[in-house]
Length: 182
Image 1 (spheres, rainbow, N blue to C red):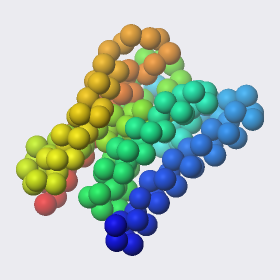
Image 2 (spheres, helix red, strand yellow; image 1 turned 60 degrees about the vertical axis):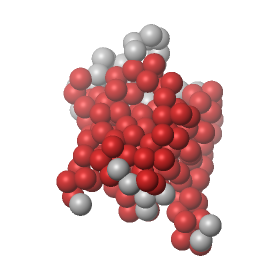
Image 3 (cartoon, one colour; image 1 turned 90 degrees about the horizontal axis):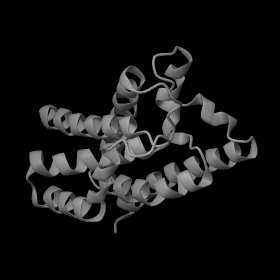
Image 4 (cartoon, rainbow, N blue to C red; image 1 turned 120 degrees about the vertical axis):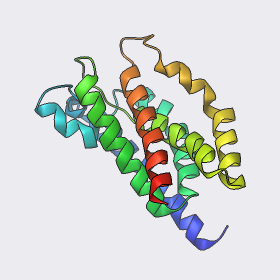
């Protein structure tokens, strides 16, 4: 692995470490920071759009998001550091914005919207690019994480299926925008 790719993967790991640091601080204050998540259709909930991926409801919640975030974020990073940052920002802002507009009245936190966004981006990037590399990454993504699609169903009231849905749609949009940009 060349030095540039190795440094790029450090960015993904750094992102995951940042989420863990925020969670440890949040845990130490009784998860009061989680109140800064997305609160749909409220002015105070707007600040949650950029903050919610860094906030989690529990240590178990952040544990459940850690590996998929690192793996799928790493796959996105294989397309370049700038692409990683652009795609992440689109997913966070568009997915979070849609959640703020259409989500049920609850406090939505967690990186799972970003995970679903990366999933949607990687699969659609394979479809749009049709390069061998992008198609292989898309197949590996579906093989490893295709089961997350069940997270789009409103099965548990504590799980933000809306965040999953809007994250996925934002990732699909990001793949489309990237294709148009090229």
